[in-house]
Length: 73
Image (cartoon, rainbow, N blue to C red; front, side, top):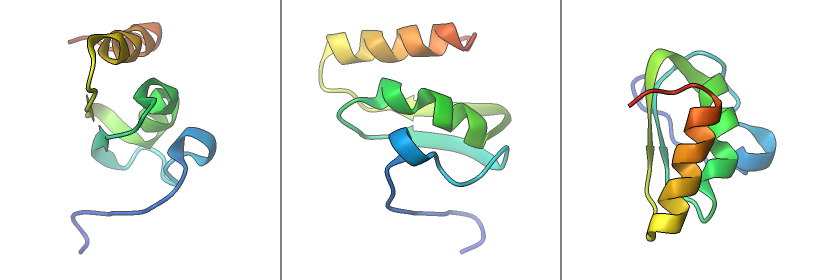
């Protein structure tokens, strides 16, 4: 539909293929911190990122990547 876009691609290497259009990005990847830069490019100003991580070490790396880009919680 025109509301939700689903694609299969390597977003860590190739990005999301959009700039400034997404309201939210959901990351369910082995290394979601590697996609934070691409997600930032894809998001509208004020957009949200959600990253699913199975362990605290991965969650910490996501938080570090978000802080580097000056995200606030």
